[in-house]
Image 1 (cartoon, rainbow, N blue to C red):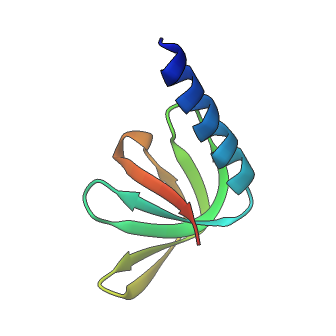
Image 2 (cartoon, rainbow, N blue to C red):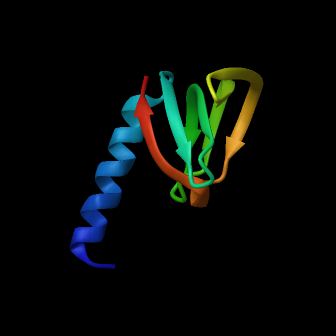
Length: 79
C-alpha cells in the first residue's frame, strides 16, 4: 500500500473515531441518506448506527439500530 493511501486511511480512521457517539449523516451510493449516532466502524468503513433515520424526499423513517456496509458509503458527515 502506498504511503499516500496509508495517510488517507489514517485520516479517515481518526475522523470517524472523533465522530463516535455523535450524530452523523451517511450518504449512500444509491442516493439514500441515513442519519444516526455512530457507535462503531471497522477498517472497511462498515458503520454501526443507533437511532438511525432514513431520509427520503424529506420524509424521515425511523430505523433504529442499523449496520451500513462500507462499500455503499459515499461520505460520512457530522450533522
